[in-house]
Structures are given as C-alpha cells and as structure tokens.
Length: 257
Ligand SMILES: Nc1ncnc2c1ncn2[C@@H]1O[C@H](COP(=O)(O)OP(=O)(O)OP(=O)(O)O)[C@@H](O)[C@H]1O
Image (tube, rainbow, N blue to C red):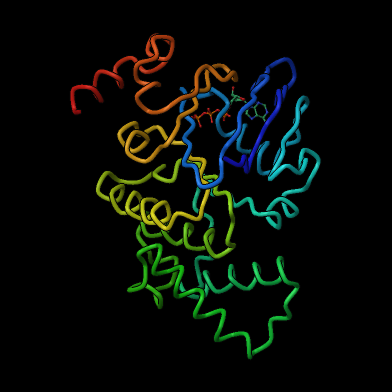
C-alpha cells in the first residue's frame, strides 16, 4: 500500500494551548478514513494544517512522499489536495452550472496553465455537467445558487470541489447545518465518489452512523492527541475510546446494528 498522505509528530500551539499534539498518521491511496472526536478536539485545526491554512509549530507533512510542510494552500491544491469547509462557499448570483464551470476553469489554469478562450468553453461546460451529475445536481444546472436549498448548496460545493480534481479530499463536516432530510442526499454523493474508487478521502463528521457506514478506518482525536486508530469495529470495541468519547453514541450505534 502507498501512503498518499503522512504526518510526523504534527502539532500546533495557540498561545499556551496545544490544539494538535504530536499527531502521526498516514492515509493510503484510495482509502476512506474518518476523524472523530468531541468538540474542540482539534479536528478542523488538523485539516487547516493539512490544507496549508495554518503552519505547524512542530512536525512534518508529506504528500506522496514529498514534504509539503511549508507549502502554500495554492501549491497544495496544485499537488492534489482539495478541501471543503463547514460553511457553504458558492457564488450566489451565478447559476449552478456557472459555479462549477468556474471551478473547472480554475483547475485547468492551476494544473495546465491553459488559456481560457472560447474554444475551451464547451469542454469546460461538459466537464462541469459531469461533476454536476456526480453530485446529483444535473436537474438544477440553470438555477441560481442563491435559490438552492441548503442541502443542494452543499452538493454544489461538493461538485465544485470535485471539479478541482483532487486526489485527496478533505471533507469537513459535509452535513453541518443540514436538516435531517437533506443528509441522505449528501451521503449518497459521498458514497458515489467513494464507489468511483479513485479518490482518497479524509472525513470529519459527528454523525456516527455515517462514519461507520463509509469509513475503512477511523482516527479518534482527543484534546489534540491521536487517541486511537483502527477499523470501525476496532474503534467501537476500544475501551479507551468508549470511556473517553463515545459513551451514549456507542450505545446508540450498537443497539441499531
Ligand atoms: N486560530 C485559533 N486561535 C486560537 N485557538 C484556536 C484557533 N483555532 C482553533 N483553536 C482552538 O483549538 C482547539 C481545537 O479546535 P478545533 O476547531 O480544531 O476543534 P474541532 O475538533 O474541529 O471541534 P468541532 O467539532 O467543534 O468543529 C479549540 O480549543 C479551539 O478553540
């Protein structure tokens, strides 16, 4: 197995607070790995370190064997890291298709320095329609983003992220702020991406049934430290995890299965 992402003793301190401490892990190519942990455990901060929004005060990050610890966000995007945020981030007054086409165009520029002239336009639009299809939004292509329901905006965001063609997807709580009825749709999109089989995915989520359903492996963060790592079953059976974090959620899951 090839590690697409690896961290060694990664850490960051804000003032005296060690938000992430000595976190070492690796993610294999095409693996689906989730990160769980209570509020404030350091999950989003870890993502910020991986995507380059924050620079670590300690440790190293490697992407496909290449050290990227000091690389910028743009450089990491070019190298294949794509990151979603907890908040929706779309152009409200453009249509769904226009939003995704812009992402396709910026990917072309970023990767191939292609000049975006009118002959490329049709190609960009075809690609954009493909990503809308993957994100289960094909029927909404002409809708203004501002008029989409919240769940649909998250799907659009996912389509825009996919349009950047990242090898490694960092998904930060894709169901955040969603109503319960919207959750199955985004879950369906993530499953579809997983089934296509050519993406490595790191997912932060609080919804345990979703985590159990999707993950090959799970990492548990607690007070900025990596408390445990293993298959969903290993994590469920891990007494340290149960006592430190899962509690009621664990009982809820086992009574369902
Ligand atoms: N820029 C910052 N400056 C100071 N403290 C920060 C900063 N970013 C995060 N923190 C602190 O680091 C800790 C970890 O926060 P983080 O947002 O990573 O947790 P989380 O596990 O993602 O939580 P949640 O599940 O609520 O999103 C928290 O105590 C937070 O207050």
